[in-house]
Amino acid sequence: MRERIAALALRQVAFGAVSLIPVRFERSRISQPFQDGGRTLHCISTRMRGRNLGEPERPKIVVQERGGVLSVVNEDDEVCQGHRTEPFPELDTPVPGKT
Image 1 (cartoon, rainbow, N blue to C red):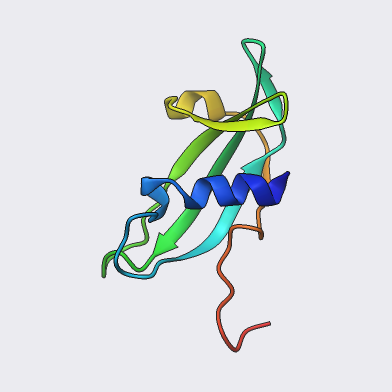
Image 2: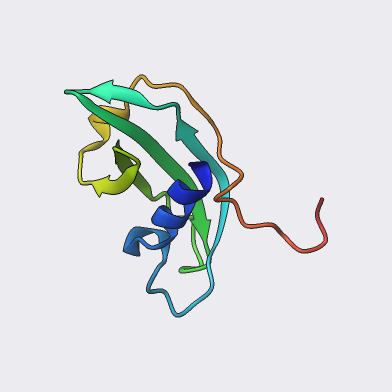
């Protein structure tokens, strides 16, 4: 499931899907599935580098799981407040030469 969520995130414009410049992700986080208004949601955040020369961008999305189907839900950040997150290495980009 986590690999499917990472693949969905990478198809989003906010996560560099249409960037002509390669981007890389670090310190990605995902929440455990939680219920909100009868929906099962996951919050995903990361630090994305490469699209600009300054500070990393911090894209976030909310993913809804319904019957095994994943979709991005446009929500404000409040739905993700207060939910514990854990590292999400499935989204991080390995840096060559580092283990």
